[in-house]
Length: 115
Image (cartoon, rainbow, N blue to C red; front, side, top):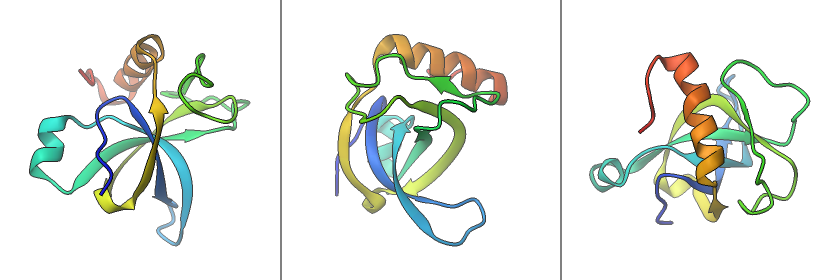
C-alpha cells in the first residue's frame, strides 16, 4: 500500500461517473493523516490535462511541473473516495499557493474549507 498525505498528487484508478470502468489518472489527496489512520480509503480530487474547460470549483495548477505532472493541468471539483490499494504511486505534491486556490474553489461547491 502506498502511503500518501494531504496535498500529495497520486496516480490512481479513477472510476468513471457512469460507474463502469476505470482510468489511471492523477488526483490530489485531500484527506488527513488521521483519516488514513482509521480507514482504508483516501479522499481525492480528480486532476485533468483538459485546461480549456474550467467549471465551477475547478482550479488551474500554476506550478504543474513542480508538482510532478507531465502537462498543464487543473484540479477538478470531482471529489471521490477510493480504496488505498487503488493508488499506484505518488507523483509529487501540490504547492501551497496552488492548494490555497484549490481550497478557495472547493469552498464554492461545499460551503466550507478543506483545512
